[in-house]
Length: 337
Ligand code: TXA
Ligand code: MG
Image 1 (spheres, rainbow, N blue to C red):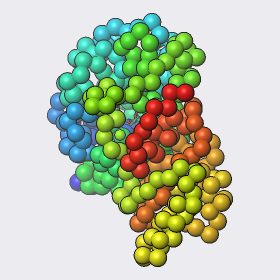
Image 2 (image 1 turned 45 degrees about the vertical axis):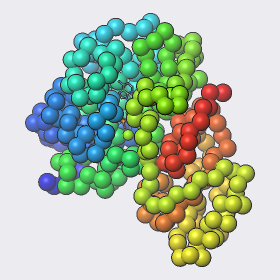
Image 3 (image 1 turned 60 degrees about the vertical axis):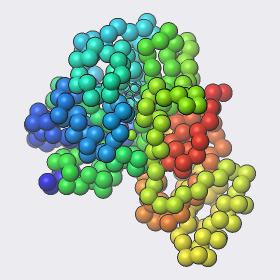
Image 4 (image 1 turned 90 degrees about the horizontal axis):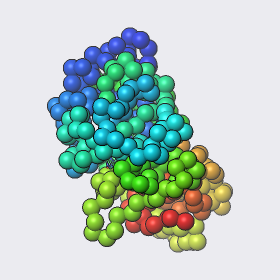
């Protein structure tokens, strides 16, 4: 199968619609990361996503809809804060988990009685979703465990020859996946941190929890149990106080014929003059935007990628730190401050 990368013109949207109606899988731009979409009402189409990604069968998918799509047949009631959150943050990088009516394929939620729904703000995603006018199940468009894609080329690198079409909307402005928010309880609870922060949600809903699975407990958001976002090279991770150790490792690796490279925020890069570095930037928003692109660059230019933990916490950094920890295989502790 030939994989075409096409922009979002009427002709190509029509082609995308035909593929979706035929049960095919189509990749599309969103403001967070690219998605791998299929008709959420079709068992066969949804199963194709799991097969293509090599995704574990117990990791549920998010359903994407356009801004005018009526989600009420899909959800079985909602708490009072949900409408206010939708008004404040949608369309945008917030996925809301509701009690499900079970109208979409049972494979979407993998046996859970809830359904995750997202209304992306990317014009490409909106036009695609409007054109198909169906709920579209879509995980990030990367092979399972690999780094999420933030350009059409990244999707192509993972799925060339396996899907017919990538709807190109350019580089993703957000850069990390949406915030996943459990909206089934009295208080909303973040299951996956992202660009819509705990502070932002609290300011609208009054309160907002952050869920962390207790030891041995199956997480509420099953995807969070898996090693993720991993570059395909050796990795090491240090905090900013361990810069000397990181430099020693770099030098040792180089002596042994390896190609090490640092991934760190701008002011740490400045201290590492003369070493190979990938610059994450200086603010949470920029770090989110660059992280996945740099992880994918890192695996191409280096045999050993050395991550240095950014100093900043809170806001968007909660999501950035979470993704970095998981990319570098570090236990992700509670950051509930
Ligand atoms: O920004 C995003 O959310 C991107 C773009 C493509 O929209 N999508 C994305 O999908 O990141 P994925 O499949 O890579 O991650 C979905 C996450 C997983 O951690 C999954 O376990 C969780 O959402 N999830 C999905 N349905 C859920 C549900 N009913 N209850 C709890 N967690 C759910
Ligand atoms: Mg993913």
